[in-house]
Amino acid sequence: MLKINTIRIVIFMLISMVFLVFNAISCVKEPLPEQPFSPEEVILTPSEDVSATILTDEYIMPVAELITTKTYPDIIMIENKYIKISAIPNRGRLIFDYLFKPTGNSELYRNTKPSPVKTATDYVVEFGGYYLSLPWNPRDRQPYDLEYKLIKEGPDIVEVYMWGEDPMNLAFVEVWVIVEKDSSLVQLKTRISNKTEEDMNIELKDYAVVAPGGGITDNSSFIIPTSEVTIEQSKDNWMGVRGDIISWPPTWSKWGSFEHFGSFNIQTDKMMGPFVAINNHDTGDTLVKLWEPADFFDGIHVWSWGKDYTDIKGAEPTANFENYTGSISIPLDKSIDFITYFYALRDMQDMIMANPAFAGWLRADKQVYEIDNDNLIEIQLQVGSSKDYENINLRVFLADLDENVLDQVITEQVAAVSPAELCNRSWEISLKDIIVEPGEYIFKLEILDAHDSLIFTLTSPPVLIK
Image 1 (cartoon, rainbow, N blue to C red):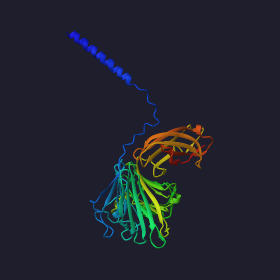
Image 2 (cartoon, one colour):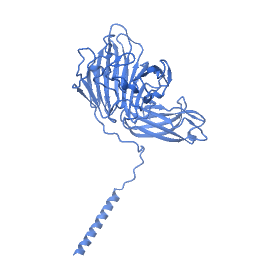
Image 3 (cartoon, rainbow, N blue to C red):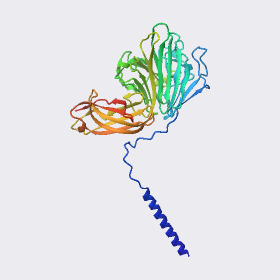
Image 4 (tube, rainbow, N blue to C red):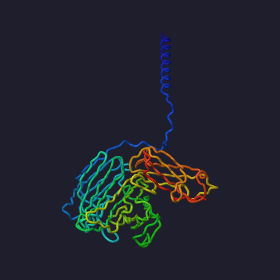
């Protein structure tokens, strides 16, 4: 009896094995076609709505001696999957805080209870954030409080409208703050109108108190697309004498060498693009500020307390980007408009060019190549975007110094790029395949969206082939 049971068990096991093998064979599919995407690429995280919330439970020290300035002002919180920002119209703060979720760090300095801090010429009380010099309270050196209205509250876009009138020149200021879903971009549309009975002349500044990563560190760098800056002032002239023109970037463009208080100026007509950025390599945070039109501002004043900020009561490890205009004439019943953008990226190493959608750099591994001795050119690329993009197309060209295209050397499709997931690439190109004769050349990148529309371009520093 035991023998019969054993035989039955063996037969049952054989039948089961045959069944499993048959199923396995039937499940085999044709091999998948090779994917056009690099294995570095990732799938974007699911889309999330953008929303707005009004908070009234945080004390913020009043500075302006106005009955309308509240100690518990409305704080407008705007949040999507990448950022959580706040605006405080009652303090004139168009942006008060900017939290970048991929790193968990703030990108702007904020202080609800600031103390007076002595600069080289005066005392300042700095709440931080981003704000304008209109409408302005000259006594407190602070923007006046604004009124506001929520225009759109999500789920695809949040739009906040703020407005106020300057009591001195009666300029009427309007700002629309816009945040969309799945984006780290904050867009600020500003309009200044003349509603008086005669022509008006104004001068305008905007102020961004930046501290990417929660504070500048030794391994933070200023990114400014220019070849020179002008020294304004520095403690004991450590940067140079006022008026000195310094080639950019100097050693102190890295904040680890920014020893003491110092300030410098950039003329915007000497810039390769209308943007500035600051990069904290220790935390992986990069904050980009851009503006349109490119020639709206005449210059940028940049200053920092430097590494010895701890010796100055009330000072913080921050930097100030202050764009300024000359005198602007606004005729009766006319307006002027400009747009400011902020966005953050994670793990950006450098930046040559930026627009509201993309930022990045492109370069060859060497500056000089010899046709007889060098076989390959390595082209390196890093690009980040202010919002989620899928299926973008990269094209890299060899060009002369006038950007006339000579040859297309790279074509590649990228599955996804976002504020948190950058596109990092490195290609090796045969030197003899692309170079016809010695000379200076550049590489030119074009990025096209899924519909083949050009959305970003940048060029590499020149390379010499001899």
